Length: 143
Image (cartoon, rainbow, N blue to C red; front, side, top):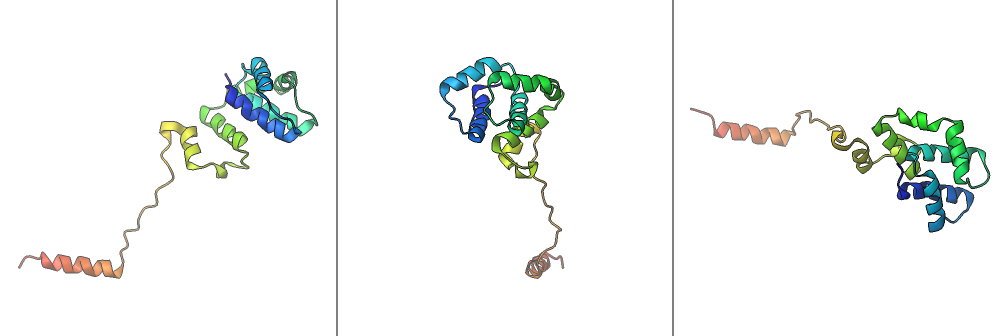
């Protein structure tokens, strides 16, 4: 379910908070135990853990949080775009969805993404442009 890169992202965040170096062996160990969980289940568990504990969680600590808060069921019913949004917020450390950029929007919404709202021109033209159009129209008048 979760990739090594995604677990690495979560572990690096935990390591930064708790002052721990995340090595390849630690990543492999966590991955072996936690690979069956979706990334937001683990990211959510890590966030909850950081709010209550003063030490780096072991894989079993994260599993306990997942079970205590029923995180698997919580994230099971979430739409894919919502899950991707929360993953970006966690991964990038954003405070709100206002921080999400264009490339991240394309990742979140895929082919459905249409980009930012286009600003329509009011059709107003400058006085100079109006004069040019008038002169051009006079050249083509029928006599």
